[in-house]
Image (cartoon, rainbow, N blue to C red; front, top):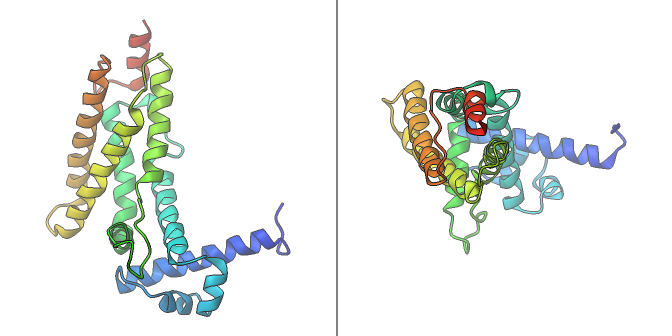
Length: 222
């Protein structure tokens, strides 16, 4: 078990504290934080910050990982997708995602902005904030499809496309003062299911979006 004398544990805690500080600075000050502001918020010096992170990109990646972990915790963790229908399961996942983004809209803007930063600028290189979410999503989908010996070729592309659509729509949602979170979730759930349903139909897999997944799997196996 890690102790206070464990160098790796101390480093992990220090990195977490800087990520916490980055969240606070971005939440309150907007999506253009300076490393000085983040270090100051953490009660540290800039050189100390750079002892924990190789460069800006390293810190930004840690912020992106934190958001991906928060989304996964609310959207997927401890949720049994097999007992729910596909559309309902997607709505559950997207609701968790929207809750995280709704709590930290500036963090999302910050990460999305980092993705479009020119590589030759002084800022961090582009970050794909959806990569981790798409990979986890793909793993869940692949496991379900393999349980009925279905061809899973291309599922990673389908999931990446679905997550990409979610990220693009999120950017629009954050700028739309009139669209409520519930309506955003409904629209995205229908959109993502449409993408996945099209993929499944190409594989000659007919799933009813309102039928519990375990029932559909039993039918497909039969």
